[in-house]
Each structure stands twice: as structure tokens, then as C-alpha cells.
Amino acid sequence: MSASIRKSRVLLAGAALPVAAILFLGLRAALGPAVDVAKVSRQDLLETLVVSGRVLERSKASLGSPVTGTVDEVLFEEGDRVRGGQLLARLDEGEALASLAEARARLEQVSGGERRIAGEELRQAALRLEQAERELERLSALRRDGFVSVRDEDDARSARDLAASAVASSRERARSLAAGGADERAARAAVASAAARLEQRRVVAPGPGVVLVRSAEPGDVVPAGKVLLTLALDRETWLLAQPDEKNLPSLRVGQKARATADAFPERAFDAEVTSIAPGVDLARGTVDVKLRVPDPPDFLRSDMTLSIELQVGARERALVVPLECVRDAAAEPWALAVRKGRAVRTPLVLGARGGKVAEVLQGLDEGELVVREPGRVEEGRRVRTRLASGG
Image (cartoon, rainbow, N blue to C red; front, side, top):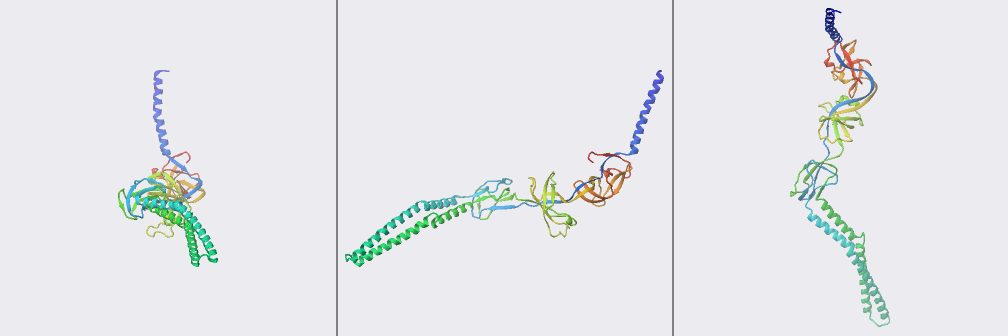
């Protein structure tokens, strides 16, 4: 083959490449841009209602002492966590400790030495009574025989009566000092009273929580009832949601919910509806819904702003479309359906919403493709569909 022929073929091939590229680009342009689409399908739908809410203020405890005294120590700073029953602060305990020690010593005295002494006194009094009775019998016999006077017998009888009275008194004292007797009960009551006065000088946590405010320092002289510490108690965490009153028919006590804080959107947590207000807020047209958080996350703070998704119902095999495919969902919803290769604006009638999908009541059929981001595609334009995996 001559060089001129080879050169002609090369020139022809080179000229064909731009023509093919132009034809390819023209075909792509005729078919339109590639767009991501989703398929309208049927699935079981958990109907939800998304409303704004906030964390209600946690239970607070203002702690102080019912007695006047000097603060000896404050053991925790603001922000510290405490356990229930943990000692938080203490007033000077010197006088109270001395009173408790005195009361305990008195109880020990009653239970020990005085009880033994009373028992011995009772035995001695009983012996003296026996002796007095024998002496009275002896003198009575002698008087009958005329050996002693009536006066001597009367004196012996008086001595016997005195001895009997002493026995009765000793027996009563021994009974009072016996285990469980009046003296022991009084001594134990004195110990309990002194211990209570000591406890009044100690401030303890009524339950687990966090120290919010520390209002006293060591050395402060504080009057009775002054607040020394304020705690936020780790009791149940509550949320407040305020849905529009038109949603009242969908609300029920016991409904489950998922909540996210605006500051931590990736950390959702569970909640449950516990009460629905009987009245409607006239100014806002909303109803207060209170929710309990069974397992509150550690980042929650009072009055923190939340997004709360209430589970208000369920639909079996509902026809659904992804919400990202819908525009003006709150007013006049529409979507771009791909029909005969073109993006056609299609008005929709939506029903229940759950998660990332909404129920389609009118406007779309099962299996139709809709543009995922309709705002980026011109209505009526030809498009090439690109179905994402799982869509």
C-alpha cells in the first residue's frame, strides 16, 4: 500500500473521532442529565409526628441545717456528683458529740452498775425483812407469856413494816433498772435525742445527684434553715412537647417517642408519653404533652431544646415516597415523577409520615420513579434515571 493511501486513511479516521464524540454528546443532551431517583413502593409504615420540645427542669433539693452553728467543712464543689446518703457538709459538732457521749455513759451506767446495785439492795432489804419478821414473832410469843411489854411488840411490828416498805421500794427500783425498764428506756431515749441533735449538724444528700450551688464556706456562722447546698437530683427526667392542637386525635398516653437534642443530633434517646394536658394553650393553639425518659443520656440539661418524634400510629403496606423527593410538603406537596423520560411535576396528597418517608394517598403509583432532589431539575426536561441501591 502506498504512503499516500495510508495517509488518507489516517486522515479519515482522525476526522471520524470528533464526529462520534459530537454524536455521543448530542445523544446525551437529547436524553437529558442523569438524576438520582427513588422508586415509589409499599411498606409497613410507622406513623410519626415530629414536634419541638424541651427538657423540663430537674428536681432540686435545697439543703441546710435546722440549727444555728459554725460551718466546719463543705466537702463538695459545684458540678460534683454525689451519692444518696453521702455527707456533704458539717457544722461544728463539739457540743453535740459531748452530749451524745454523756447520754451513752448514762445508758451504760443504767445497764451496768446501777442495775447490779439495785439487785443487791433488793436482796439486802429482803434479808432485813426476814429478820424483822422473825423478831416480831419472837416478841409476840414473849408478850403472851408476859415477859415483854406491848410496847416492845409494837416497836417490832413497826420495824417489820419499815423493812417490808424498803423491800417494795427496792423491788420497784430494780424493776425500773431492769432490761427494758423505765430507766433504761429513758436513757436510750436520751441517747437517741443526742444522736439526732448531732445529725442535725450534718448535711447529707437525700439521693444521687449533682451539686448546683454551694452557698457556704468553712467558718461561716449560719442561722437555722440557711441553704448550704442545692442539688439537682437524679430522679426521672421529663420532656415537654407542644404539638398543634389539630394533632390531638393522634395523641395517646403510653405512646413511644425518639428525641434528639439540637446540640447532639446524632445521639437519639427513647421517651414515653405520660400525660396530655386537658386544655389547649389559647395563644399558641398547642397542647402540652409530658414525656418520661427511662434512660436519660448524660448530656441532657434543663431547658435544652429538643426534636421529639412521636409514634402515633401504623400503616400496613402503605404506598410511600421518600420525603427528600417531596417539595412544599407542609402546604401543597409535589414531586417530579419520571414519565416517558421526562421530569413531570406531580401534585401529591400525603397521608401519614414516618421517619424519612411519607404515605402517598394520591398522585403516584407503585413502581413509579421520582427525582430525589426535585429542586435541581427543570420541570418537563428529559432526564436519565439513576436508581440508587436500596432505593
